[in-house]
Image (cartoon, rainbow, N blue to C red):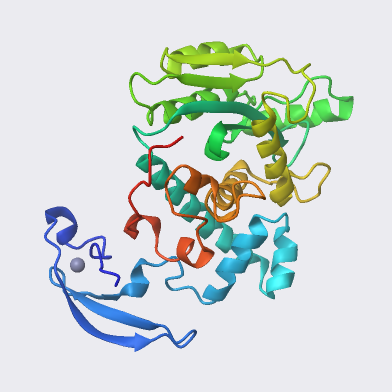
Length: 340
Ligand SMILES: [Zn+2]
């Protein structure tokens, strides 16, 4: 039985005093799916609320679209095609991306916190390159940090990169116009990678030992020294190494390839590319949650997801569970075992 953890009214005095009491005040059947919804009255502010107030589909006109939209966002279906398939407006798809992007980011952030002190340092780092609106003038980088043994995507960031060099004359004119409008575009790759490493370091035990694998980009050396404990080794792998399963960076390379294969706006030579990096980031959090919590860890690992290999859940999460309660109101099972 769900028990309301707090009053949903942000102005309720119980939010600051911590003295939350409630009474059950009847129930109703939701017309859409006949689900029985319990109603409550807050003992502090007297406002009424219900089970529904804590759910992702609270006050949605078409809540049934959320789950298929989640699958399509992780399955390389473009926004326009999602609208056609779900027989809804593009604005509805855009709204679902807003909703799911925020939900998935918070969900993953809270799950990551559960790993604090249990995470084994076996990381692989790489950056995926893409763009917003214009491939030459507005490139983006997406650093991704992977927990290698479990294929769990620990963190990702989206950051701008400077406009490309060697531009044609016509592109140089467009770049100058862009500079007048938005200022000089500078690369924020280094700070984005630093945030990835610092977020992971916060989950490690102080004396943690382990390994970070990356390519030979020279800034990684300094960033590793600054943000990860000294007991963690840094293996830098040459890009000349043959690709394939024997390449030490196989898992991170494969993860980035899967990301390109699952997120419509990352497909190469596409006309469905991102217009803004904010939208790309929301889309990537939806994919990350699908990859970590819903999909099998690898195709042959039946009943196991990347998150379940880390002990966060007993197995892959059903989407009705994942997309039910808002993350801050969930009670998750205790960590199954130390992460390995
Ligand atoms: Zn209240």
